[in-house]
Image 1: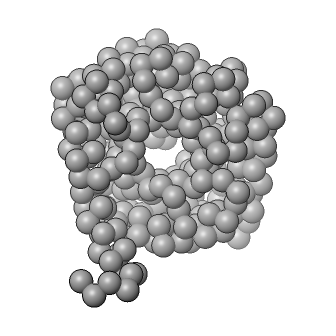
Image 2 (image 1 turned 90 degrees about the horizontal axis):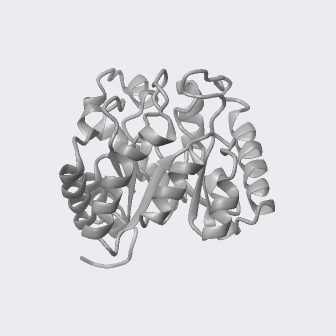
Length: 264
């Protein structure tokens, strides 16, 4: 999944996109490089980010989404949002997946909308909000807590009519979690992948990777992000959400070839 940020305050300046034409160009580059999904977001989820109203979010998101859908009719498109109104507008504009970053607490009507449309639904774990997080800090219990919360939320979604095959779980690395907790969750990818749902890992360029490697500058976290993606895939993740699509595809191509019996 290639990340397309329409947010002027995204934590990684190198991922910010200035307008519709740039969205289409970068989306085409990612798609041509091998990204199977393109994720468009218009509201930053970085700690302390100023929240948007659905109207403000749609003003940024929907024109770019319409243009990208027209330019890449075969691509799978995802809208990164926590607002039901935005999700509905995105689905009407041709998006395939709602990447819900509300943190196991969906907006009113979100699950019913997903159930009615049959859209894919990414359920992201977090506690609190970007403005008021309640962090997980204990790496010895975090995986059990996250699994419990994700399964509870997924079962609730099913009770609202969402089919299990629509659901993909995201443990929310970096979402209201200490660096030690995010690292432990990444380490436990295989446990998360064993749950009865698809799994997405989104570690790309996040702060916990910078703390691990001593790289406070997000622009220097490309290499460690590739390592995280390779680890996640070999541990069973179905999707990795990344900023650096071509580099990740190249690394995964080598990884895949080394894990086959082909001679060349």
